[in-house]
Length: 159
Image (cartoon, rainbow, N blue to C red; front, side, top):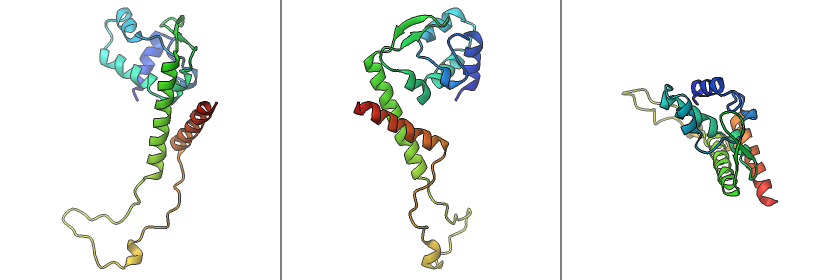
């Protein structure tokens, strides 16, 4: 994530960009061009990375509900989120949740690793080569968040 880009945008446009993700609001469509128009001296790559990091998170996607106002660089209203955009955001949230859950569940078990130029000992008895019983792995914070967001998305879809 490009914290540097987000920090720069939050410094230049404090009514639009927020470092704390829970304060974020839907941005005006085409805001990238507005930033370049106001600050042509800025590195376009930095702007792009900052915007990408800002808008490609589940906390931002959760703000995209139909009818929610979008804001411009000054924090003024600049359109609103459509139902199609909300549905797209829900799909992204669900996909991120599935990825996080799969990552948390699919961590390969650490086993003996052969060093470069060395063969593994094939005479180890079967007990030492067996993996431990299949126990669901404990989810980290990212996994728990993803599962909670997926649950929220399912509840919203059920309504």
